[in-house]
Length: 328
Image (cartoon, rainbow, N blue to C red; front, side):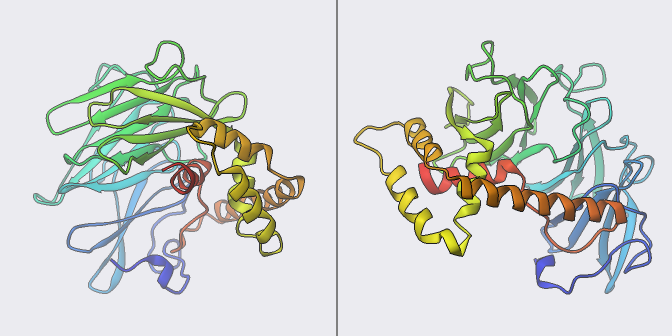
């Protein structure tokens, strides 16, 4: 698949390469097994649209609200991925219900299902926290052709819904009632596969601003464990500072010293020592980066344009990249 980043920046909707409507949220890109590129986004009313190239021309169609499916409008941005022979779109509606749209690439057919809230939902998992519009739901394809969805509830619980060909189940992961016994969430979670098998990493920021890592190392999802990494600000500072040429040497020295554990040292202790090494200059650099990122994002949203390029990574992706570099 050719990536959008290798193309000249172009407007794909409005009066650009197609007549698709104004965007309300950032787009997501995915490809079929045949290599067809698909781009999905929600418009200002939450209706989901798909754009693709047909006979050399960009075309578009409605994916929800009476289009390809009868699924309702989305609240925020989408998650899109493939698993096995299926393409999946996952999102939350304004009431906190989570929906999964599925395109079967064998049969060329769309379907959808509600994943939570009982009734018409396939599980009784609670509603997702409403008002969440900043980032898409955390999703992860599984080896058996299914997927995981992780989200935060209004009372700070982290829920995982796991969908497979023959069943859909859910699990409450954090707080004292969950297997990981981790603190309440103050942010939406992010998911990443565990390199050693079919388990996964889950990261989120708690209500105190600390970055928490939950991990499951096998396909049965047991046991779940948790570790405190450090605050969101300090994590971003450490990751972003490594890209600053003027502080490169200082950062390498601090990182090497802080991440060289004593024999038997736990990852949590290593993470905390890295946090202690974060500098005021790093915090200022991160503050400027985040402010510029926010300004660019708000400008794109104000224009309502869908553009063919990747957007800034959210905190969870930075977190999992840091974990890969330091603790695997």
